[in-house]
Image (tube, rainbow over all chains, first blue to last red; front, side, top):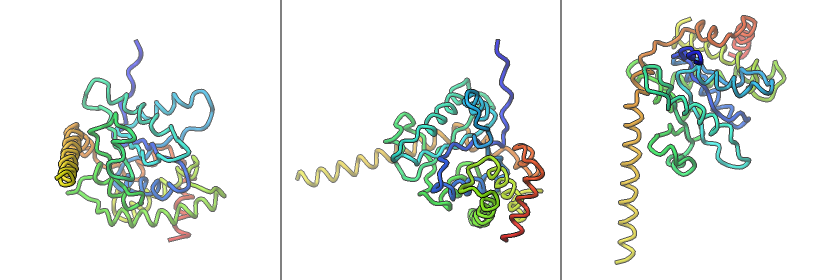
Length: 205
Length: 70
């Protein structure tokens, strides 16, 4: 009998998003919003490229997170299948017998009503609509994972996001890399976001 | 009038669609997205860094970058 999987981290959120330059501002907005909520952004960027075991480690990472967040807004050419594939992996966890630690799936899209055409199997699931903007991403994340009564305010999180964008530019420059989509820059970006959130009084040190 | 009938049909189809989406949203919400997730207390900055296994050298580099641009 296989050993039971360890309990997922309640605060960890697996990010299933496109890793390309045009998505970078939205990715930084996701990190800013999640860290502002005291949540831990997790990504396959943490997993080194070593071939065969990669898929198993991705699945392990999704299982280790209580929540996964899937942006399905990249629907044009060239076709990208990683996001729908990883959504399928995450959804398979949702189909396990219901319990207090059931995996939660949050969907994001850029356009209203498009998901019902591109992925009709998910009819009835309402994605957060970000309109392709960082501000929209902040709003969608706070809508899905925040508590309106307890804050933070979207304007505060967006201000943090703008500061994080400047810091990320500096981190990329120091590493001589074009995007934040590498293991080292991703980790340093999350570290910077957590420090900025402390400075803004959004989370504890 | 055929034209009028088409417009009316479109409107009612839109209403039906909106109702479906709204029902879906309620279904997802009641499926514990908000209640369970919101009951989790937020992590501190050190807990976030620890969960990700961010080395101290990376934290230092991040703080240096903040200091240099902000």
